[in-house]
Image (tube, rainbow, N blue to C red; front, side, top):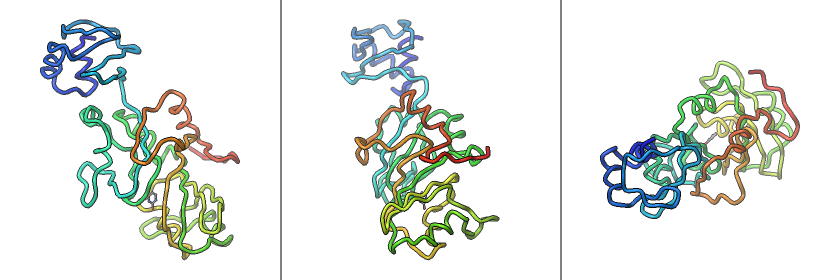
Length: 245
Ligand code: URA
């Protein structure tokens, strides 16, 4: 692929803009300056720098972020900054979207991509990708509440009761709750339905992919092949569960 097209596909602006930065000698490929925009390169594992910043060619972008509190998962946030402001402009130019939204006060694992099929697969209710939330509650959680969450609770505007796939008590006021769906305020509404209240909410796992301990709030990183494979795991629990897809 020609260098100008490569840069354009990676989010460095219009073809004309990419041509200009190449002609200015601002781009190196595999360690050497290339100032001819129509030079052809094999994109497989291609490494390049633009104004000294290192990039790798990626046909599609797959990333995870540790969403901080007080950020909105929207391009047009209303009351807080957007999580998209935490990403480099090249990723926004590529049209990266978040896969499902977390509430403004929810923290934790958020996936982003510009691959429409992947976004659909990960967010479609049909695929039932399990998501684990660490829920801190206002009142101590009792075994009856756990039982009811596992049996299913009736939420307003839902035709049928919704059950947690798993619900593990971690301490008096902390549970790990696994859900197959991603309905609006689902965890908060389910916990309210058992007469308790969510004080803090953090998503700690999607499919088989854990939020890494070394990914600080506000940080993001690319998903590699092994992370993408983990996302496809239906069993995010230590005890295997059956999910009918
Ligand atoms: N459930 C909620 O209530 N809020 C979230 O952000 C995610 C799941």
